Amino acid sequence: MKQEIWGWGRAPRAVCEVLQPRDKAELVAAVTAGKLIPRGAGRAYGDAALQPERTVSMRHLNRLLAFDPETGALEAEAGLMLSDLLDVFVPRGWFPPVTPGSKFVTLGGMVAADVHGKNHHHAGSFGHHLDWVEVMGSDGKTRIAKPNSRLFKSTVGGMGLTGVVTRVALKLRKIETGWIKQESVVARNLGEAMDALEDGESYDYSVAWIDCLASGDAFGRSIIYLGEHATQADIDYRQTDDPFPKARKMRNIPMDAPNWLLNRTTARLFNAVYYRAGVRGEGERIIDWDKYFYPLDAIGGWNRLYGKRGFAQYQCAIPLEAAEAGLRQVIGEIGRGSEGAFLGVLKRFGPGRGTGISFPIEGYTLALDFPMSSRALDLMDRLDRIVEDHGGRLYLAKDNRMRPNLMKIGYGKGLTEFAKQRDEAFASLQSERLEL
Image (cartoon, rainbow, N blue to C red; front, side, top):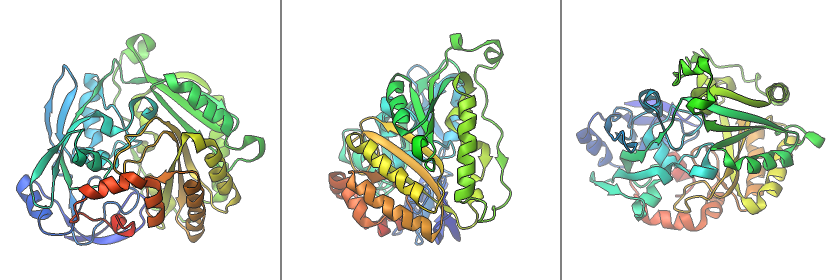
């Protein structure tokens, strides 16, 4: 069936032949018919899961297959939604070892993007916690790829270009409660923010909201959120009555906001209000898992706030030795530009997997949302040059406009290794744009 689809950023859009196999036989038929790209929940922000000739939705191949309550070992089909996994296992005292900032993603998508979370400095990326993945090539045959294999190293983070991930085996982590012990720290500038993230290394989780429009002494001011899974001893009587709270009910945005709603002026206002609220809330508190890990998931269709034009998320990683200098230049360029940056997020990365085109490298990653416009595209081109000068790279799961040259420079040797496992039948608009 031909239909217009898009990623979470709502740009670009493409009319694609969308196939929705419901069993292995239908999947084999789809995969062996010619050029295609697999698609999970459509939460890649750009064009990574768009292929006009054939886009194969994995959403119906979503069964839980096996679970060992002694070890936390889980086997599931790749179309299983993380939100469904959480619904089943959080009440039983289990949590994913790594989670991205939205629970509305599939396990296959998490493999394809080698997702990272707020605990990368401790736990690494999703690929570090996989026992194996099953991959179907363009010949319709499935292969089990284990962590020491070349296929595994290129598939995890490979954006669906080595084949369709059909099954995933991973280990969940045991938790005593569904509550998070959070400590929020106010940083008056970028230096303090980076110090707080370094000092918070002992916490399981750390993330910073950062104001990229503040200037002077407040340049890079931030609120840092440090977190750990709360034990029974950490929670009070009210939380003991509900040790594993359910996810919050979602409130939907019913229509597209007008394009003028989000601009530099409203971005400054939002950042100022958010920072003041963070100052008032500084200190330790107990919050539920859903609010800590997935704050934006409480707003269904929050991408509609950017209007029909859509938006771009710019997420870069800069190596540790160049991180502060690179971040200062990136944030300074944003401050001088005419576009407002919303939802600035700064995280400390530990060592990356160092294989294929997996995104994380040891250092810092900064993610920013820009309403789509010609001025925003020009700004991101300027940011590209800064990232390149400091040895950094961009995240393919968020990208919708990177140029091939930055891809080649940013991923270097890993791209060469990835090319050896590349299955040419699998191609997205992104891979074609980046000449992968």
